[in-house]
Length: 229
Length: 189
Image (cartoon, rainbow over all chains, first blue to last red; front, side, top):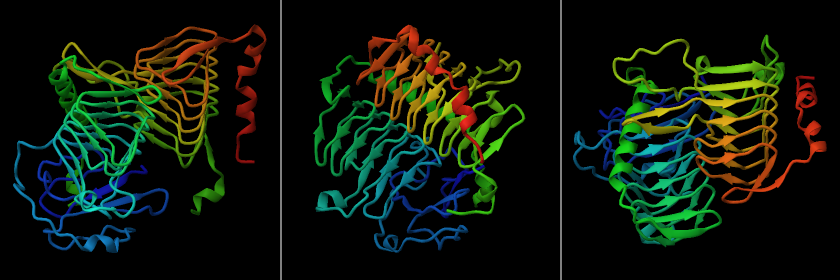
């Protein structure tokens, strides 16, 4: 199976060839070294900088950029924060800035998360924060500085560098948000860049739906943790 | 990238005449039904792992199906088939994605429809929303975003973001939507 392998070297169970439990990785920095190797296997390595030296997965080229930044993490065993599903075909790029993810996020295949070029100012350098229950669908590209709780980024949407997306937004398919743009809470971007504010008050229901979806993904996609430890 | 396998030819041909690229990513193969004579090009993703969830206690019956595809379908490079999911009666579940015969999907399109009828042609870079139903003889032009739950009637042309019916398929155009010739043109030769 041409799956991408994720491996982690701390006590955190971020591995298995599919759904990943980030319970112990919340608020830690995920430093993902993302490389393409041969077409059958696509290996990503996750390294926590406090962790002991990584066991090198075969075929992985370590990225020298990653050896800097050492960020302390809070609460490594905070069990209340967990349940993020990251598809193995996702690219998480932390070469230029860190990525922090909340709980109950769903990151679909082919999406690209993280800065793809050098940050231009200190705010961008602080990295990318996805709050809880953020859904990133297939093929979306997220370079934002911040994405608020309950926001859905739909198929093929692109969020520019340094952008700030508020809570409970919906970024429609193939839409784009420019660099440094700020999108207020409850915004729906649809069609050809049209916007409206959705105050229908169904946020809690949506959050529940996402939580259920994560549960289902956890059941559907095997996470063979032992294999990667 | 080169590998020893690639020299054997890009496509694997199955007993029922499906031509599946070695570089496609088909996940959950046991839950996918291919009707035969279907072409799957490189970098296509088919998410057969997104199965229908069964409520606690209720045992699944028969063979589970996530994606059902008819005959003479053509999936271009980089497109993706993904069964849609929703909450129904308090349970989140994915539902099967059904595709009939002679369906063409253009490059880099993402399909999350519930049903796609026969002789449907979907262009490049389209997004077909969750639980959309596309009936027979429909043409979806390049870059269209078909919204979730939309039902596209037969013989219509759909375009735009969000997708709207912009025209009708004429009687004479129907013959051009047969994919038998396209299928024959694909191969290792």
